[in-house]
Image (cartoon, rainbow, N blue to C red):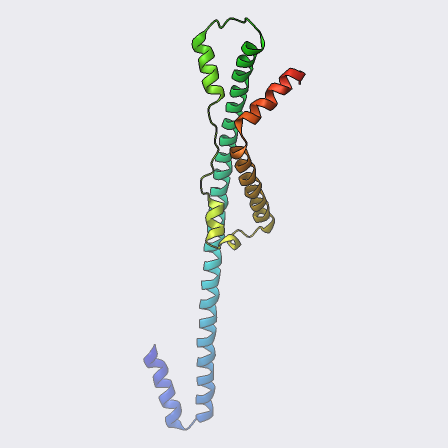
Length: 182
């Protein structure tokens, strides 16, 4: 193909058709520029498609992380309910003078499990990875990014408060509530 164009150029120059040669050269340059622009457009389209797929994958991973959060929080709630029931049993024994402990093993288990330390941690998640690597623009839904930022800010704050909140205070408030009948 290159030989073909080379032969056309030589014949035009040899025949003295300089204006035709210049038109031909300009046409060839325009074709090359158009080819480059098409290649750039295809490359941009492909990069955008890859970023869109990556964003969709991130959203899928974030969804899985949120499901894990729900499971962890559900487990925490169930453990807190269990601790509350066990603490109520213990308080009934202490509040009732002369109340016999029928099953000392169960009482000791209630005592032990009601005071079991409960700490909630959050693993590093997909959203944290996205923010740390500066790729939050991959997810093109700004309202979703804002809601995730707010969710994890609140989640971390509440978990931190929960972990720092002394258990004795929790039990004291529960005991007062039981005495008041609420």
